[in-house]
Amino acid sequence: MAPREMHKATCADCKKECDVPFKPTEGRPVYCRDCFAKHRPPRGFDR
Image (cartoon, rainbow, N blue to C red; front, side, top):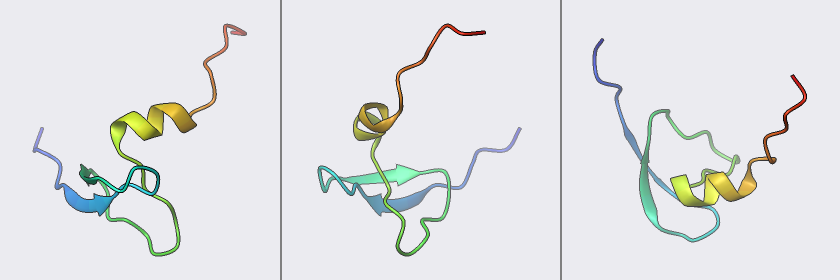
């Protein structure tokens, strides 16, 4: 498998520069790994 192309982005929460595996879209927030985990809904066990 080929390595993914990474793109530079600035986290919408903490303003740190980070690399993301997608091209950021204008007008949509991008989060670093730490802030993304805070914004994800908690995982439920309702399978």
